[in-house]
Figure 1 (cartoon, rainbow, N blue to C red):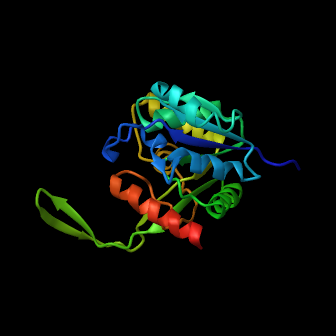
Figure 2 (cartoon, helix red, strand yellow):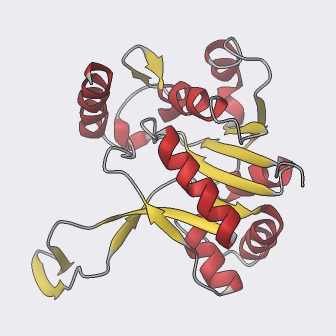
Figure 3 (cartoon, rainbow, N blue to C red):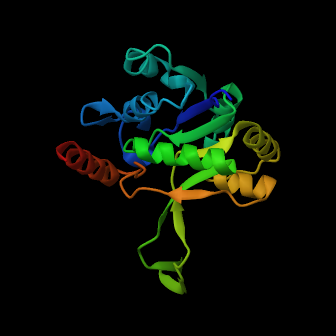
Length: 229
């Protein structure tokens, strides 16, 4: 049996207003390199990945060519849409692999071991989502008051990359977008549109999503520690 083709889709079309920079989030520098470069280099090192597709905002084409294609002209890119889900759909449509990994460019500290865990579980179950347990106390708030305490037992935060068989994911994305139903990640979309329970693998605390300036500073500290170890 031949190797199973896996496409990595890196979603990099977001604007990143909460980060408070003039650059789109994927191109904000982290230790001298654009955020997106970390994920691209990592996925390029994974022997099981057959192609990498980057989903960009149309306005970012000059930046992408200057900062990304200058490193490797083999990386394909497509234009994203108004919502993250539209961008993922564009990437999945462009993919040729039997399986796809969907990853946010805003998670630059993803590790090769995590990617390989997701791939292994995805091949076994058809889906794989990295998760980390919630460790803080969770409250439901209305206005300026706590109205309920939430039992955090069994509650986890989902990360990326999330792995799926391409055809079922594509069908779910197309139906959801056609119906105007939008979800925060592919796991929740697949659960809602196709039913079933996506498989999970242990995520990593360091695989943070860069949303604010504080996240960027934390990523700098984590990267410094990783390089020193």
